[in-house]
Image (tube, rainbow, N blue to C red):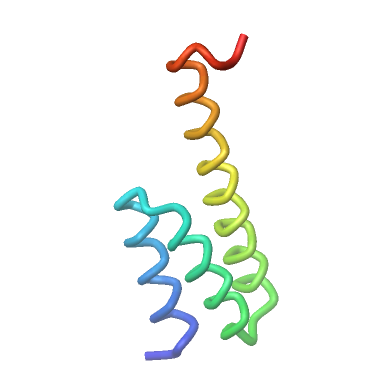
Length: 69
Protein backbone atom coordinates (compact mmCIF):
# COMPACT_ATOMS: atom_id res chain seq x y z
CA UNK A 1 0.00 0.00 0.00
CA UNK A 2 1.17 3.52 -0.85
CA UNK A 3 2.68 5.39 2.13
CA UNK A 4 0.24 8.27 1.62
CA UNK A 5 -2.81 6.01 1.87
CA UNK A 6 -1.41 4.24 4.92
CA UNK A 7 -0.86 7.56 6.69
CA UNK A 8 -4.24 8.94 5.58
CA UNK A 9 -6.07 5.85 6.87
CA UNK A 10 -4.23 6.15 10.18
CA UNK A 11 -5.06 9.87 10.42
CA UNK A 12 -8.73 9.23 9.68
CA UNK A 13 -8.92 6.58 12.40
CA UNK A 14 -7.20 8.83 14.94
CA UNK A 15 -9.56 11.67 14.00
CA UNK A 16 -12.60 9.39 14.50
CA UNK A 17 -11.25 8.56 17.96
CA UNK A 18 -11.23 12.29 18.77
CA UNK A 19 -7.46 12.75 19.20
CA UNK A 20 -7.39 15.87 17.05
CA UNK A 21 -3.86 16.94 17.95
CA UNK A 22 -2.35 13.64 16.86
CA UNK A 23 -4.67 13.42 13.84
CA UNK A 24 -3.52 16.86 12.64
CA UNK A 25 0.09 15.72 12.79
CA UNK A 26 -0.59 12.51 10.87
CA UNK A 27 -2.69 14.36 8.27
CA UNK A 28 0.26 16.71 7.76
CA UNK A 29 2.55 13.71 7.37
CA UNK A 30 0.21 12.17 4.79
CA UNK A 31 0.20 15.45 2.86
CA UNK A 32 3.97 15.39 2.67
CA UNK A 33 3.94 11.77 1.50
CA UNK A 34 1.47 12.35 -1.34
CA UNK A 35 2.56 13.04 -4.90
CA UNK A 36 -1.01 13.93 -5.91
CA UNK A 37 -2.07 17.58 -5.51
CA UNK A 38 -5.68 16.72 -4.69
CA UNK A 39 -4.61 14.33 -1.92
CA UNK A 40 -2.15 16.88 -0.57
CA UNK A 41 -4.90 19.51 -0.41
CA UNK A 42 -7.34 17.08 1.20
CA UNK A 43 -4.80 16.15 3.87
CA UNK A 44 -3.98 19.79 4.57
CA UNK A 45 -7.70 20.58 4.88
CA UNK A 46 -8.23 17.69 7.31
CA UNK A 47 -5.24 18.84 9.37
CA UNK A 48 -6.68 22.36 9.50
CA UNK A 49 -10.07 20.95 10.52
CA UNK A 50 -8.47 19.03 13.37
CA UNK A 51 -6.64 22.13 14.59
CA UNK A 52 -9.88 24.12 14.50
CA UNK A 53 -11.63 21.33 16.39
CA UNK A 54 -9.05 21.66 19.18
CA UNK A 55 -9.85 25.38 19.43
CA UNK A 56 -13.61 24.69 19.41
CA UNK A 57 -13.22 22.24 22.29
CA UNK A 58 -11.18 24.78 24.28
CA UNK A 59 -13.87 27.40 23.70
CA UNK A 60 -16.63 25.01 24.78
CA UNK A 61 -14.71 24.24 27.98
CA UNK A 62 -14.18 27.93 28.68
CA UNK A 63 -17.87 28.64 28.21
CA UNK A 64 -18.83 25.72 30.40
CA UNK A 65 -16.45 26.99 33.11
CA UNK A 66 -17.94 30.47 32.87
CA UNK A 67 -14.70 32.02 31.63
CA UNK A 68 -16.16 33.37 28.41
CA UNK A 69 -19.13 35.75 28.06
